[in-house]
Image 1 (cartoon, rainbow, N blue to C red):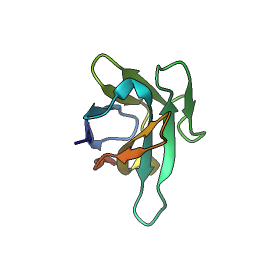
Image 2 (image 1 turned 30 degrees about the horizontal axis):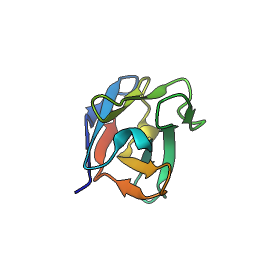
Image 3 (image 1 turned 120 degrees about the vertical axis):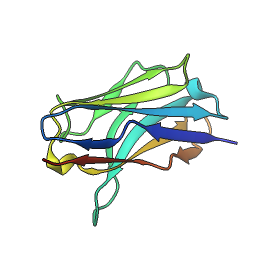
Image 4 (image 1 turned 90 degrees about the vertical axis):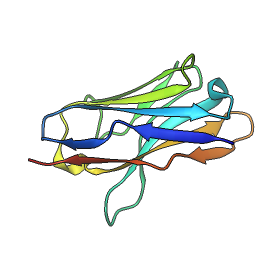
Length: 118
């Protein structure tokens, strides 16, 4: 059974930092490209960042470039999202996504809430 479990969300003041984690089990983690998405109330889910299966390449949305950084530890089957200089518009539920690079099979986590507010 495949599980993606996000953690690390919470309430933070503007300008603060959070580090999200997504722990994967039940799948060959190193064979999966990993991404973070977010969905704010009333908005569509949007891509935040992606990292390739061995971590060679990353992509970050323009809205988070220079503030967020995606990384992964294949030995721990975990992908991270370091979020710095948080803004109220970063408030959303953040989801972890895995895509197998051979089969293109997709898995999603349940999400973790991030709220940026004073």
